[in-house]
Length: 228
Image 1: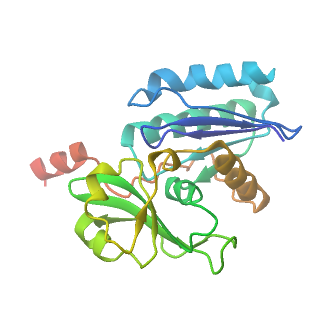
Image 2 (image 1 turned 180 degrees about the vertical axis):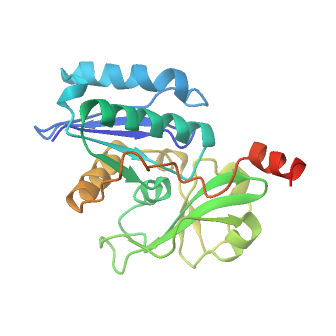
Image 3 (image 1 turned 120 degrees about the vertical axis):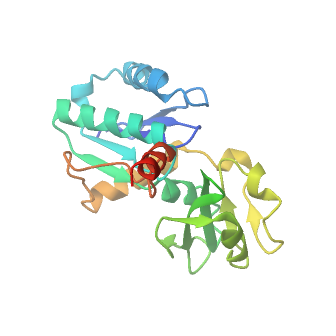
């Protein structure tokens, strides 16, 4: 199938395209909070390179978070608009699961994390029984104070975080933090997870699909504090 995958949940966004002939293409728009300006041109350019029109897509997959509020809104809105216009399925992917699958195949404990601001992290843990085995969830996506997160890291954990500088000094000696190039969306991982989700029937309802924020925005919390 022709499958488009969007991940705009962090500053390192990606647009991947898997083609029905087995080929794949990926672009990484300029890092930074520019998803609103760069995403649609990136999609158009990728389709042009493949010689496709939007109507040639069989499914659209999108990272739904947790992550950047603005980035998630842009990505999910673009994916829903495309899926509606084409009439194709839409498939949600966890940002933390995408990150976790960037870990090397011999990592038995994998922990992915994103800066949630205000002293917190978004995180999820994954485990494989043997090197090269399937990576399975050990915890749901959650928000956790950074100090509690570091103290709970299992021995031998391989940690993936797109902005590691903030937490690197807190990582205990019994854990390893991934190099920066592993802690961003990779085309092969995006395509593999999206293809697997489609095969498992993990299609979302177009009208109810929303980003997985895990918390309200600072503006919403401030509003509620002013108007209890």
